Amino acid sequence: MTDARFEDGAEKPLRLMAWDAADLQVVASLAQDSVFPASEMRWTPAERRFAVLLNRFRWEDKGSLAPGHRPERVQSVLLIEDVTGVKSQGVPKGDADTILSLLDIAFEPGPDGTGAVVLTLAGDGVISCGVEALGVVLKDVTRPYVAVSGKVPHHPD
Image 1: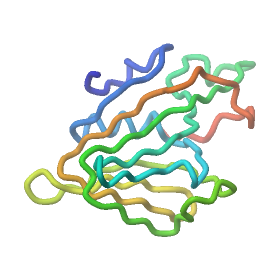
Image 2: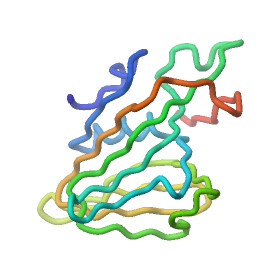
Image 3: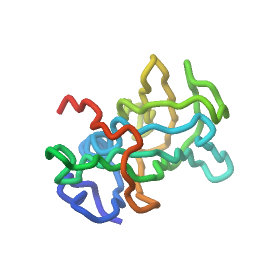
């Protein structure tokens, strides 16, 4: 795996790592507007990992904004490494019928390289993963598929 760069997203499956704030901005922009059932989050304390299986909109798809193009999504794993604890607010846990929408991923630095990776969700939901060091992976795990809604999410960038 290599450091995240937006142009790496081309037309092949993404497999990016974020080790600093600049890398994380790229990962956050590519994961923005991902949706996932509340049941698709896992914190494994023994492995110190927090993972989410996302249905990610393919912002890197060159044709995604072209007239007549059918917008695509792909299932991706968002993996946060070296997690020491997870807190959430406004997030129902384990409910497969509750669909969450990811708005942003940010790093809040703490002392000596520690900090928190914060997932901001639509509807004022927040998941905060305390980490010993910033380490986030975004990896596509399926082939792209036509977005069920047939619509392109609003992307402020």
